[in-house]
Length: 275
Length: 342
Image (tube, rainbow over all chains, first blue to last red):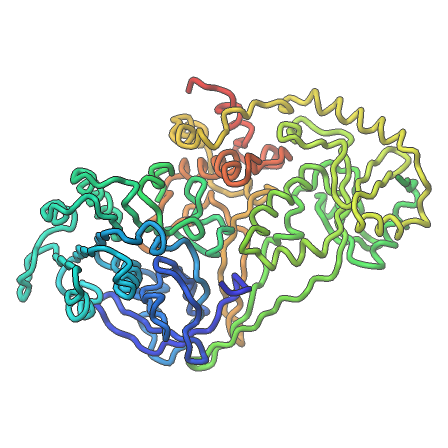
C-alpha cells in the first residue's frame, strides 16, 4: 500500500492480448519500467483512464511475477469500453492493492485445491492458481474446472493448454455451454459438470463467476459433501474509494473493498443477500 | 472558567478572526448556517441548529482531489493538497460535536483519509451548550449531554454572558486570545444553565426512545422485517436526509474535463439514490425500500457492529425537520426499536 491511499500512480500499458471477443488482458508497469506495487492473490486495484472513469479490477497476474501486473478486463460498461480501445504505450492510473487476499499462506497451505471458474471469473483465480503453481510443494493436488459460453470465450486458454495441463498432480477440466464446431471437449454448464465429476469433498474450493453459476455450483458442492467453511468466493460491487470509506460497497457490516472481495461461503451466510 | 459579556462578544470574535479563520453560525438569506466571521456577518449563536450540519469543515460537500494533465499517451498527476491553515469553529452543539467522532472512526481508521485528517488536525473546536433543546432533539437517546458538550473549549450562553471553559491546550490558547475581553467566573451561572437544559432534555418526547432491538446480533432479523415496506412507502429518494445528516459519510469520486486536463473531485453522495450501487451489469439495490433500509440499517446496526456499539446517529433531528415526506429515523426507531413481536 502506498502512503497515499487515494492518489494513484501512473502505469504504462506495455502489452495487450485479446483473450476472447470481449476480454483483453493488459500488461502494466510503472513509468520506470518496474512493477507498480506488490500484491497478494485475490487483491484488486483501481484502474482509471482520466476523464473517463475509475473502476476496480482484480489483479490477474500472480504476485510471483516480479516484472509486471496484468488485468483481464471484460468490455461491459463505459469505462471498460474505453480501456479496450487503448493501445500499447498508453498511460493509465493505478492505485492499490485493495482488499483481503485468498489465504494462500493460511487455510490453503497443504490442502488439495479445487478451482471452479465461469467466463471472466477466471481472472481473479488465475492469480492464485499461478501462485500455487509457483509454490507447488506447499499445496496438495489441484483441480481446475473452467467453463465459458463457447470455446472462443475461454480466457487465458493458451496458458491453460500450454502450461497448466502439464503440471504434476494438476487436473484441468474445460467445458463450454453449447456444442460448437472444432470443440471435442465437454459440453454443459459448470454446475452440472461439477456434479458429474464427483469431486472429492475434502478439497478446499474456490468459486468465481457469474452469480447464477456460483449459486448452482455451491448447491452442487454441498450435495457432494463440501463444507461451506471450506468454500471461498469473491464478491463484486460498485466501488469508488477502495478503502472502506465511500460507503458504496457496503453489505451488512462489511465493505467488499476492504473486508472482501474474498469471502468464505459461511461468512456470506451472515450477510444480508444484497450482493 | 471565564466569561465575556455579550456587548464585548463581537470584539472577542473579531480578535480570534484576526489570528485565523473563524467559522460560526451566521444568518444569511433567512437561514442560519456555519459561515466565516467578518464585521458584516450576522452572527447567530442563539440559534439552536444550523440548517446544514458541521461536517463540511472536515468532509466538504465537494472537493478537488487531484488534477491530471494529459498529452498524447502520457498522464501527469498534480497533487494539489495543501496543509490547511489553522481555523476555529465556534458554537458547535453537542450533537454535531459527537458526529465528528463518528466520522473519525471511518476516515481516520487505517488506511487514513489524509484529506480529512489534515483539516481535522487544523481545527480548534469550541462547542456550545444548548439552552432550549426542541421536540425534534433526541441526542440524549445516544448518551449525548447537550448541557455540557466537549471540544477544545465549551461555551454556555445566558442573557448577559458567554461563559467559556478550556478542555485542551488548543482551547486554553483560544481563551488567552480573548483574555482582554473576559473576566474570571466562579461557574455558578453555568451550573444553573446545565441544570435547566438537563431538565428540559429529560422531558423531551424522544429522549428515552427505545433502541434496544438495534443490536449487531439482530442484523439479519431486522433486515428481513416486513415493516420496511410500509416505512419506506412514501420515500421519494430525494436524499435530503443524507445531505443534512451530520454522520452520513458516503461519497462519490468523479471527474470533469477542463481546458488543460481533467480534475478529479469527490462529493457527497446518497445511498438513497437509485444509481448509487449501479454497475455495468447489475445493481445490488433496485428498489427504494432496499435503499431506505440500507440507510437506517447502516446507522443503527451495521455501523454499531463495526465500531463497538456506537450508533451512527446523534439525534440532531435535522432529518425530522427536513424530510418532505415526514419520514425519518424516529419513525424507524419507534416502529422497530423496542418491539420484539414484529
